[in-house]
Every structure is written in structure tokens, then in C-alpha cells.
Amino acid sequence: MCAAFGSHLRSAYFEPIVFLNLWHKQWSFFEANWSKPYSVVETLKSLRLSEEQKHILFGFILKFYGGYPIQHISTNSAVALRLLEKAFLSFPHDSPEKLYCLHSSHVRVPTILPENETIVYKYDEGDVKVLSADNDLDFYFSVRNIPNSELVFQTFEYFETGPRRGTFMPLIFLNLLWEQQGCTRRNLKGKVNSTLEVLKSLPLDEEQKHILFGFILKWKGGYPIQVFDAEEKIFYKLLEDEFLRYSEQTPEKWFCSKKYWVESQQKTFLPNQSVERESSLNLPDYVQIEVHQPEEDRLRIELCRYYFDKFHEEKNIDPGKVFKLLNENKLPYRIALLNITGYLDFLKKEFANGIDRKLHQLLGKILSSHERKVRGNILVLNPKSIEDRKAYTSHGHVSKAENDLMGL
Image 1 (cartoon, rainbow, N blue to C red):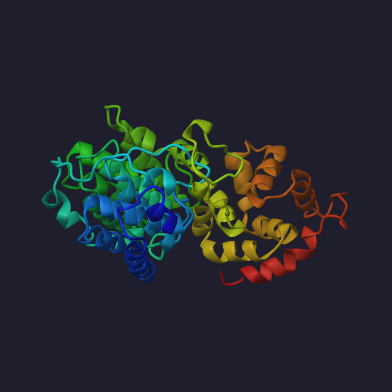
Image 2: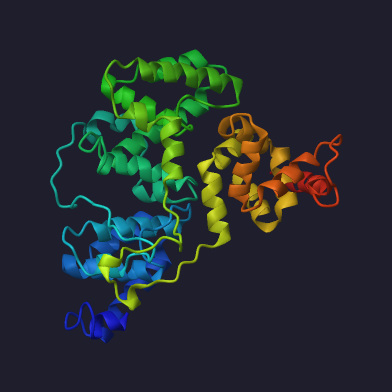
């Protein structure tokens, strides 16, 4: 860090010790308060520094954690870092920090719109306030409230810089969505048709209802809808029909689809040491950052792509506790556990086209194991299988996995 202010990129801009003291105080504040991801970043953005000084500070906080882009992991720390990354990249000019604080496997910087641009919103808070919750953005960005932080980011950015920029303020729409999907969940049991009629009769115009219906579907996994409860299946299919009945071609018809979610998760960046930098950049040695992605983080991201949390929540099984069991055990136990919860059958049907070999390949990727080991451990769960039970031992972990699942 000192090198950047001594003889390299920012020489004579800050005295090294002055910047280190500034950085350390703000970094300590950031770590102490990232349980409120949105507020802690807003506080840093309000520091009495120039925009360029804040840009430098934010860059070096990101660099301390390995550089940006930040991995899409559902922890409050990662959420806070992603929000800080947005603030860092909102600086409208090129800067040495956009290279120096970049993760070592990246070369391109994403474009972020300047934050000081004035926006006139089509719908204001008064249009939907009585239909909405009263949460702040810390509520939505806290993984304690919403474990799927990627879903929150996608929704927030869709209205902040995406296709519906200027339609709703992100917080106003999140509060509308939260209240209406909550009312739907609370009233659905035994009242499928009346619950749908309540949504259809909300005092919103047709465009507002279309957007709302789309995001209710998106937060349920996207359409075509896939749920396990019989009444929910009927309700969400009817809501899907209402959503698609809107005559215009809208961005929601792609953004709220299951296909969009799956593709967006497959494109999520994971740092990879095999990615080579473009030689034309001639980056100095001190820009190189050691790449390290803990296995726990990698596993969490992989499972998130294939509806792990949503599947287990639908089964009334705590996905966090199932993940903890997976993370603490090896492949034979993992296969036994996922077979008991039904997740193997779900993966096979939804993501492997019902084909065993594709399932084995997919699980090998998710669990960082060889396809043959996955296949063997699945086969020995069948008492009639002639697979080698000494080489593959998942059948010996079934009782323990069943006991571990009790009460989840």
C-alpha cells in the first residue's frame, strides 16, 4: 500500500503515513459495522473528502480483501463489499486504482453510471405507500433477513441502473414487493382464488401490476414456476398467466424468468488463476494479488446456482443447516444427505434432463469430485446395486445423515 504513495501511482498525492491512518480508521469502522451493509457504505460515502479521495480510499479497502469484482456470496461482509464496489466504480473518470485494486484475474472494469445524475421517477412513494412495507435498505441487504443476497442485488440494480431505471426508486419497489408477497404467503392457504383476486384488484395501473407480478414470480424462483405445495402450484401458475397476459413485450418477461436466473448464476464471476492478463497492459508486479477462494465459498456459490436454498425451504428444511452438514463432511456422506432430502432427484429432473450421467457430471462439478466417485456413491444407495460397496460407502452414512436431519 505504501508503494502506491511512495514511488508509484499516487506519489505526492498523500503522505503514505497519512493515508495509512485514514485507511485504517475507515477500514476498522467498515468491518465493525458491515452487519448493516447499506448504512455503513452510505456513511463512508458521506465522509468529508473529495470524490477522488473517497474513490482512492474505497479502492484500497477493496484491495485489502483481494480486489474487485467482489464474489457473489451471501454474507453481510460480501454484501457490504459489493455495495462499496459500486460506490468505488461510480467515480466517472479513469484512475490508477481501477487497475491497482483490480483482482489479479481481471482486466476490464465494468461501466457504472455516475451517481449524481438527476432521475425523475415515473412512480413515486405516494403511489404505493399504503400497499408497502416500511423497511430500510439495510433490512434487504442483510443476509439474516434474506439469505439470497444475489436476488436482492439483481432487484435493486434493475431499478437503479437497469431496464426500469426511472420507474420506481429501488427501495420503494422493494417495500411494495415485500409487503405484497408477504400478504400472499400469509393468506394463500385455502384461498387460492381470493388471494389472486386481491392482487389483481390492487390500486395500481396495469404496468405497475405487471412489474409486481413478475417480481413475485422471480422471488419464487422465476417462471415457468416450480413449487412443491399443491395450492402454491395452482396460485403461482395463475399468477404467471396474469403476468404473461400483459400485451406489451417488457424487460420483466426475460428478467423474471427461470432461464434468466440460471444463466445469470452461470455467468457469475469466480476468480480463476488460469485467466491471463493482457500483456499490453504491462501491469507492475505489485498489482499481482494472490488468488484464493475458500472451498466453503465455492460450494455455497455452486449450490446457489441450482436452487439449493429454495428447494430445501419448500421442504421446510433449514438450508443453512444442510449446507453446514455438507461443508463438514466428505463425498459419501454428502451423497447420502442430498439423497435423503430429495435434492438429487430435483437436480436430475430440473438440471440434468432426467439423465443419470448428466446428474453425475453436475454433482461432480458442484461437490468438486470425480464423476465416477459420484456415480458409485449414488449407486450403492440402491440395495440391489452390484456396485463395489467397499470403494463407495455412502450407504454406510444414511443413518447418521437421517439423524442429523432430524429437527431441521
